[in-house]
Image (cartoon, rainbow, N blue to C red; front, side, top):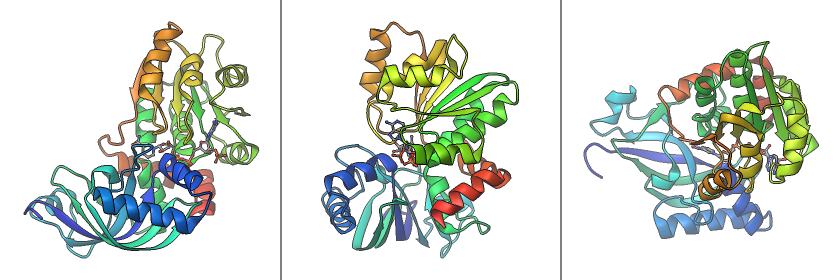
Length: 314
Ligand code: NAP
């Protein structure tokens, strides 16, 4: 380990949703096999880089040594419990054991050690939230703050995967920004997740449609939005194939924000060209300034969002 690097005794990995979905499918829903697969990926690559999705997640653990850079930069000390805010795909990791795999929460209890580079990012776990909730929120901390930046008062936003954790946060951020004069529409493939989005109440309408079926999703969501298309479309699905539906839902000169790691960025770019849509395509950068604080603040001030996520993660 170099002097500027931070050493963490790792307790839990939060596997990103696209990666966990792929692992679960490949292992026929068998949690023990998913655990073995994760251990094997980390053994071979020295990091949790899913070779199929190219995505990772983040981790929770206790600081063994802050090094001489990150402790001061993030206000943390040896012994603090922290979450990493850089992807597991680029976090050196050694696992001694995988203790438990929670396929629903996408959280995996392990014994291991990780290194964070001086250019990385960590945050101390908030002491007012259950750790499982904090981990879930911090995993997708990059999502909602970008929506707060991109949405406009009175504007229109469509969220694909609006009942998932980043989707709920993005819909809440959209509602706050567009206000009562704007419109927020959610899309989910199945009733259970659509009902969850409805319970939280950020969307004016939540429709059930497969985001991977462009014709179906445009028909279902457009009925509740402006006839010219949405100003902003956010893709928070964890499954492939949502690129064209998202692009076709956006208005001319609108923006499509692909937070989903199941996105094929070549399919999005070439698809937009193929259907001659002049829209801005944004890759979901997992980082933006103060993203962890903004996401936790959004969660704390929205009682319905809190109730929904607590029911899933506590
Ligand atoms: P999540 O909680 O699993 O939510 C995904 C939602 O999408 C679920 O409600 C799911 O419904 C829904 N969905 C799946 N396929 C769909 C389809 N064809 N049509 C409509 N809805 C569909 O996932 P998350 O944690 O919010 O993560 C969302 C995405 O962001 C993932 O791809 C994840 O890898 C990515 N991510 C990106 C970053 C980044 O830095 N950009 C960081 C973390 C995560 P069901 O539950 O019914 O299947």
